[in-house]
Length: 147
Image (cartoon, rainbow, N blue to C red; front, side, top):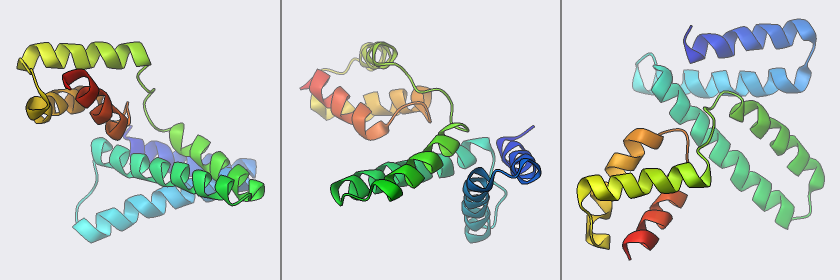
């Protein structure tokens, strides 16, 4: 079963169970997937669906930060609930130790010695950690280790 099929099945289950908030979020996810499929005229595979989910999770996190700074706890709670549903479809995130080990392995594999080699290291790390780590944070860590 593909990830997209699983999300569709979860939408039906949420309808049957009467979970309105979960249903709304799952519909939002399916709409984002469908929008990308229509825009690109392709059927998305699991990796592309994960990319859509990662983008949605990032947007939720940014919204939460904005709402917290604006003192809107009601909207923070709503976004946090959406984020929880979105993250339930994402693979488990790498721990700090696993991420450090992956970066060290990539540096050793590529023979990187300075920040100039960051692209090579990020290429190796991205292939192994796609969907399981925030690449902006990974980039900062790689830069710190090489710098």
